[in-house]
Amino acid sequence: MTNPSTTADQASADAGSERHSSTGRCALPSNALLYRLAIHEAGHAVARIQLDAGTLELITLDLARERGGGVSWIPDDDDEATETRLTNELIIMLAGRAAEDVLVGSVSAYSGGPEFSDLAQANELALRMETVLGFGTALPLLHLPTADRTMLLTMDKELAVRIHERLARAYEEARALVGRQQAAVKYMAALILHERPLEGHRLQRIVERIHSKVVP
Image (cartoon, rainbow, N blue to C red; front, side):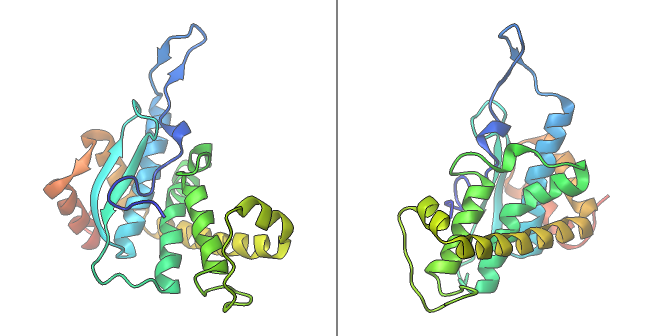
């Protein structure tokens, strides 16, 4: 998984890459794109708050950088790597896409792409849960490390199906969470757009408002 103190829950590189017009000049991002990216990052953040998975440290939305934005957090000292806890992490990784799905009405390619993208991280974690962490839905005691994920999944179609099913369940949980927390996600997204980056005491006050369900 991504280092939680630096680039956790990053959107795809495509989300932050500069856009260019037909004349070759750098084009400003549209309001629709900014809103989508803010909703995406807010989905990650609100999911982490609701699942009580660490302490939010920073939320960024920086289109001048390759990664575009992200949510950084500090893990809990007593964080236990149970199947429930790791499944929650899958939900959080997929919550950006889910927030786009529920609140924008469509999903973009921003969750996928490079190895630090949401989908890449979620797939890697789901693979490890199935093959080396002892949580496999089939043969859970089998330890099956691999250096070539693509080859393994190409040769073992049943494993690929189990991983996808695990991810699909986590995604539906993410959509349900966003559906329940629409007001909080919209509130967080508006603040991300207005006050980027969100960090420090200001971010903690926002987290407390969401925890207390005191949002506009």
